[in-house]
Length: 412
Image (cartoon, rainbow, N blue to C red; front, side, top):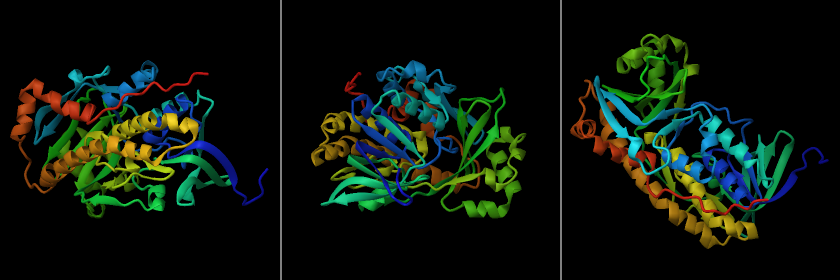
């Protein structure tokens, strides 16, 4: 038994910090490959609202390759095979996923806590996997300019983890990335997002993803008995909306989404509305000796397209494929960490370029409009030409450079 204030010490091959999509998927893949792995998650559980819910065909393909797809799809979820929107009162079809090159030709809408709970349950089937909840990494442990572990806090007291490799999966505000002093490039973002929920009726259409009106963009995600909603606002505009009062906020929602008029009264105060401060950045170098950053810790994405989760999953697959053999031996050469970045950096960069173009050329313009817009020519073409709708579906559903799970599984 340790004394009060005395740090417990744990040794492991790989310590993953952050139990989000990247961390839990990497933990599962490495455990499956026979690597001793410990995941540190600072929260008490996965039940945290206002997270991305879209599990895209690329991620579902990973589940198929792991032999987990059938089991995964038994969990409650909704399916989107086509996405449509309403621009200035005009309904338009935007993307058709029924032709994407994957086993699942749809987006699965599942609360992120259910997704993470599924991954953790699958990982716990391997005896070399450990998950520590309420364990918050606070700093890196360095010896001779090499990262050799992390310092963390737990309800039981300090924790010291010694590891051959530390993987930072602790999100866009990564503590470990900052502690490592890894330089990053930040890109200006003209938008923020307000998240809220409204009840859903059986007569509501599930395919209408977004509604655009003068000065407002409203996105709805189907969660069965309620809508998870996102109101896109100009950067820094939350305080101005709050100053206008809840009644004015309700009126704004009704203006862009008239079908919500009979339920906006459910929003009684600002405690029900959460601000997501949107940032887009990218590390110039994802690694140091003994440390690798992936997912949002390496490249924070815009919420456009809901692709952040799925990019993080692809990072985890690539990292497991490249590092699995070396981690079983306990030594991870710096060149392998560089190989992970080389493999995944272009996909992240191209996605961010596309997201920033949409933000700067479309969203900023819409948020400054005084009159409801009309569907632009490109959108009209998507609506009229079914085969064109396959392109946005491919970009959103599969993305750039999808990864395949390498068969590294070590069975008992």
